[in-house]
Each structure stands twice: as structure tokens, then as C-alpha cells.
Length: 235
Image (cartoon, rainbow, N blue to C red):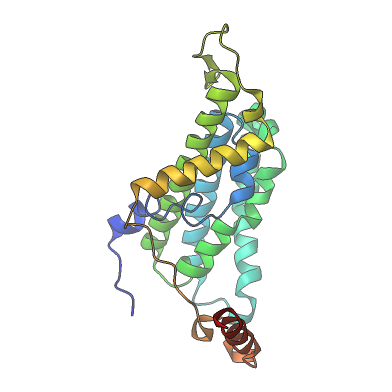
């Protein structure tokens, strides 16, 4: 049985040691697509933080009354509700950011960080812990996007938050505002976090059928297939 985490640990571990983007490698699509500038990356991260914190609390509240067979659709409806709210707020008060982020605001609904925390944490814990977990993971996601966005904007445009920092006489590197630069910056950020968290990052675990939500309706074929693959690798 896993030891229960303290509230401070629930909030702070996702910032660096278990960062959802740079350690667990979740939410890669918005990480690459919205970090062409610091403000876009930070805005995407904060929008996701709002959805994470609110949806975690709501799912924690309803976790005991939602039937097991329909829990995932129910969670998606809850997440979609808060994603719509944050999209409407951005469109009304920050239209430039809403236009820059585009479809990725709506795609928060299918962000694996949001649904993953709902299924793995909020559905099993109280409202306070769920709020802290959602906030911590959201801030960790925001930190990752801000770091990558800073790297890409500084090298690709010579500026941060739109303010010119590198003299115009020094040519920028436009590739950092494109997809290849995004992958390079993402890799550098992962390497940096891996370096500073040596020995502190979570150890990858092997999951057997005991933790599978489909265990009751499964014939065990996946376990047999995994055993066969393992035997093939050993051979």
C-alpha cells in the first residue's frame, strides 16, 4: 500500500520531481504547439490549471455517486464544462490570447494530464487533496510551458514577453519559432529537469492486471500477450 502524501507534497511534487510535461511526458501536443512565445505558453498553462483544479474538485465531490460504468463519460462532461468556461473568459477579456491559442483551448478537454488526474487521483481522494493535486499539476504544466516558451522566444525572436532583449544587430534563429525548434527546446527542457532531479524523479513501475479498471470484464489476454512479449525479449 502506498504511503499517503502530505498536502504540501501533493502540491509541490508535480512542480519539478513529477512534472507532468518534463518528467511524465504528458500533454506533449499543447507543450509543443503553444510555446512559440512566453505569453502563449503561460496562458495555456494557467488555463489548464484552472480546468485541472476545478474539475478535480467537482469529480472528487461526485465520485461516490457516479456509476462505475459511466465514470469516464461523466468526467469528460465535467472537464468540458470548465474548459468551455475558461474559453469564454479568454474570448471575452483576452481576445488576443484566445485567438493565438485557438483550438488548443477547446482541446483541454482531451488533455491527458486533466483526465489522468481525474481518474488516478480525484476519483479516489477528498476535495482538498484533489484541489491541491490539480493546482500542483497545473502549475507544473505552466512552469514547463513558460520555460520552453522563454527559450524559444528568446532565441527565435530575440525577445521575452514582447520586449526586445537581444540587439537587432544580432540575428535571431527563426527555426525556434517553428516545429523543429519546439522539439529541440522540449528535449533540452527534459534534459535540464532530468539533471536537476537525479534520484528524485519517480521510478517507472510495472503495472499488472490488478490495477486495470477493465479487470472484471477481461479474459486476461493482455497479460498473456505481455508475458509472451517479455519472453521474446529475453530470448
